[in-house]
Image (cartoon, rainbow, N blue to C red; front, side):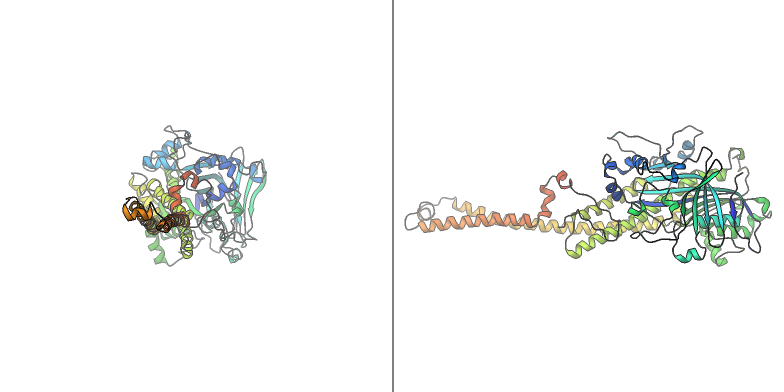
Length: 583
């Protein structure tokens, strides 16, 4: 039986309640700056049209040949579903969801021919911890508290829209609830919000990934938070995170965290019934523990916040279908918990097949939590990009020079959001009522719908303003051509007038001049020639001075986009596109 090795000073009245099993996943969502990555690795990405098609080669080739302590553990390997029989995890996971969800959010390792388009929008990777190896996640703070928990699962999900989720799974058995709560609260931190956090012990002063093999222990990544500074607008991430994302260079702003200094917590806590009273399931002490677990607070004898306020919040954040049996599910914007008391058969679900609640925690509910987090991270990324695009266009309007490049970026942003809204996003993942209610609560806690509506409105307003601008520019272009057409038309009428070949005096003056009318003849030729040259010059001036309005019509599309290089929206506070021609 694996135990968590923890050293925490005991309080004056220690709680005797223990957990049979603590299983926690720390989810770190991040956004990859695809344009920056492609520019930094042009040769690698030159053979791919779509971002997702080149991920395997990028993961395998990037930093290839560099030796690091992480090599002792292993590198990321593609880990798609490979078995689809009744006993396989793929079958049991996939049949639970609607078919359209299976197409998008399950990596089946499909390989498409160039003419086809893959349906799955993610690639799954893992670092197997096998061969007698053990990986420990260690943390300690200035108050003398420390813990080492075993990492049992390392997974990485990369999506077609440039988002990624690093999932670090840790487990511990037979530990006091005090220690479990500290593990959940401390290990989720990825950078300090201030130096005070470290001095006050509100964040670990040291975090380590330790590899154990053949009785030897080696630190493969360590962060002591002694130094830290912003990189552009990005915070200083812990090396325990950046070392696992070795293929993406944080110092070059190739990716950025989507959330704040806390990873999202997805945790399972099974209370040992032998350490609590018989009526514990219906006691206020259990509600106190649930509140501490849900809001990721440290151990305490009572509610951390006002009791009435906390009970009201728990009522909105908890799923209580199985509360009479002691099983609760809770959701906030930074946590997703499953709590139960003891292990036993669950109706017709026999314990010999695995404890049902934990099995669902590791499978379908895990996937639902990932999907909800993908929605949240994607919408936050859209919100940031919409703001950055709006800033660019506003600056263009200030100068009276709206660039084609920024218009293209805004159009691409709208197309991407439509693709997300129509192909990625689903309010309902499955038919079962319980799971439907679960997902609804998750989305509500993450504010998926309000943020989606807000982003949708912002993008539509941006698109409407650009359409109005384009319509006004088109009207101006047409009016210019109309003026030119009127002048040319007048010239045509004048030419036709002279072509009527009137006889007598008109003919003697203009077409068959004699000595008396020769001056009129040459004067007429000079005037007509001057008018023709003036009209042609005016026409050329109109087209050249407003070339940007007519360029896309006259120049083939392949030529106009051949030398265009996209610029990153996010990279650095002072970066500005150098490839776009202003109008």
